[in-house]
Image (cartoon, rainbow, N blue to C red):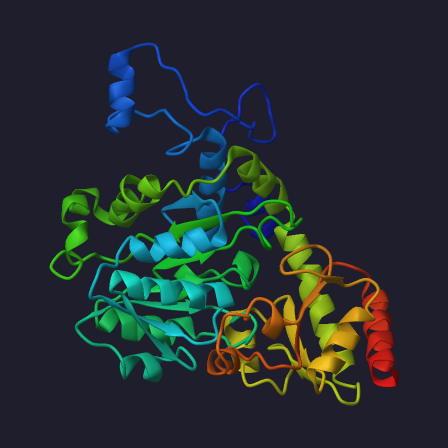
Length: 410
């Protein structure tokens, strides 16, 4: 199946009664005909559902569809994107372990790595996740490399094939946050990634109506139990060891489950992902090209030909630069004036909506980061992040053009 067909038919099961979409099983618990049957369900000796925190048919349907689209062997849905990032790491890390990560991460992820230090887990940051940068830092304590495929808001792009090759030479999994790329631009497993996470609240959902996250496993990484001792009891599950450990351990025990209603909304939104991303990427490129013509405005967008990541856009992302661009207005005051003069773009802390959204990262999502962390993430006092929507591009260009002009006059 091609991409848009797979969104409608990939991983889709029988929903019953001729339903074309999964029903919402908005219940806490599921009854069974006997204690013996429930015992088997609880001990994973029989298929079925017992309690929505550990399994729900609507959530299961969403997980299967995402796993099919990403080409993974299975997926685990979480209550938020940050929960997905957290669970993906804690499923394989323990005190004394180290992670290598890019410094151009979403502010919340940077804060999470700070929190992990209290658990004895150290993060070694690199300016850009490249084969050379991680090779220099790998040691006997390194247990994972974590990177955003397209940094948010730095917009640096990871060469997955080269980075994964170094990871695998040292027996380390590569975890890719592909939220900003989406399966429309790239399938990370085809390039060597081992685990993929998404904040499904963003482009997968598309409507800005449901907080959620999801973890997908390729099933390709072989967990050396001498190095990853926590996987010893899950070795019997073979390529499903990571998912079995996740479901039976940290994810189950922290209660980071996705609600059935949000899973349903994600299934609905998922079906138009390809159509939305085609329009959004086209809008983003045209808006970036227009803003390049505006005096006093500096534009960062990977699909611009003068961008250093343009070659990777062509070879790894099928020529698409994604939906986010950043601009620098010259000062915080000018940035605020530009933002405040926009008519269609909404001032909101989100990405992936069908509506265009703008934010001043330094004063919001990077408020708790120090100056060095902000600059490493491509965030300056005059930076504006734009999450482009599906509006008519003529209206967006006129709106931003007017806002740039008015920001200079005031």
